[in-house]
Amino acid sequence: MHLYTKQWQGFVGCLMLGLLMNLGMAKAQTPGKRPNIIVILADDLGYNDVGYMGSDANATPNIDAIAANGIRFTDAYTTCPVCGPSRAGLLTGRYQNRFGFEDNPGPFRRTEETIPGIPLRETTMGEYFKELGYNTALIGKWHEENVPLRNPSARGFDKFFGFIDGASGYYINDNSQGKLLNGLRPVESEDEYLTNAFGREACLFIERNADRNKPFLLYVPFNAPHGPFEVPDEYKSKFSDVKDEKRQTFLAMINCMDENVGKIMTTLKNKGIEEETLIFFYSDNGGECERADNTPLRACKGSIYEGGIRVPFCMQWKGVLTANHVVNHPVIALDILPTAIAATGASVSGEWFLDGVNLLPYLKGEKQGEPHQFLYWRFLWHHAVRKGDWKLVKHRDQSDWELYNLASDISEQTNLSQQFPDKVKELLDIYTDMSDQMLPAQWGWQPDYCGTYNINNIKN
Image (cartoon, rainbow, N blue to C red; front, side, top):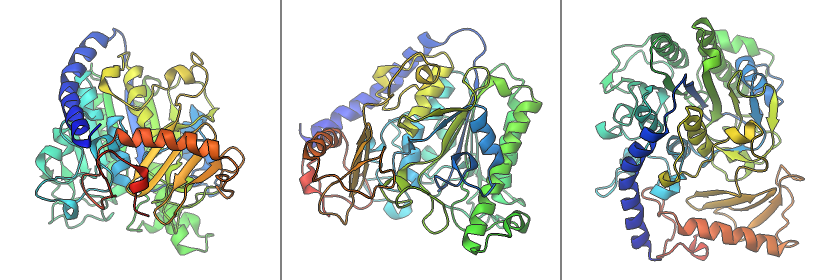
């Protein structure tokens, strides 16, 4: 099918999405107490930077408690190895490539034809939950261009406190440039270290909404431990035995974030609503390359090897999900949205064209097997697909595709493409079929698209 025909079909389908969502939600709501939803996101956190994944740094006791009280996933993925596209996938439950969000947004990407960001025709997590009757908030990093229609306040979030860009300093004593926002307005002053300010605002939102008749959705995308790498001395002193100063600062930033996760959990307990709240913890992509610990994975942020896309993921819903349970099947950030919607009692309509899967039946033992037949990645000139234990991958600087068996080679050290050509073809066919469904990148570096997507046209 010609690319422009597919683009038009996608545009018409997305225009219908709002109408379908309204009809579907109206019929799907069920009586009774619906859970609050909290999604906590770290920024550039390494696979082995949390205690429950094996780290001995003791930087994340509160995040570890979420895993101990619920589910932890060993094979959890993000949809892209950098921040902006991965967050777009999380917020929509759709591969961001379906709407051309393939690179980080920002004013430097803007052209007369394109405003980078999630297109208005796409439905965000905030918009889904507003339609469900939830009070909604986003506290933290948005990573969309700063235009009014792309502000979280215009995308389904009643409360927004944070910044739009991909990064921010942690000390906002001077906000003359208006980087830190409360809704559409610049914050007049902020005296706290930014991670603590986000924790404070998240707790205030919980306190103000805990006793209301309406449940709430709280999305807390911290920018920690993303650079710039600065942290109060009180946190650094906890890791004085770490000789590498870069690693010491990174661990301190993680620990500060974890402390604020603990404040959120304490607020839920104090308000008596912990068991009425479904909590997700995730990282937006693999760990930062110089400071994070991605052991035993290969590479880091920016790579389609496991170190760039496999991330810590745990979730808790006391009284509903089994405590201290480990899931080894591959899952992806796209699953958070449909899982959260299903937890409310609403049906996840196939007509929304979500790529994510409702994980609850698998976590409750109502369904067996793997939630996904395969997982797919395309980040400009980086490409991968995973099916079962097999993963096919190709980076820009490679002339050939590589094949790995992750069950026996989690570190991706032994390329098996020559030994298993039939497996290469099987996965390559899946990859090509998926990429044929996607739009070209709408900004950033453009791969060589020629009509229908053809893997042979990718520039190395």
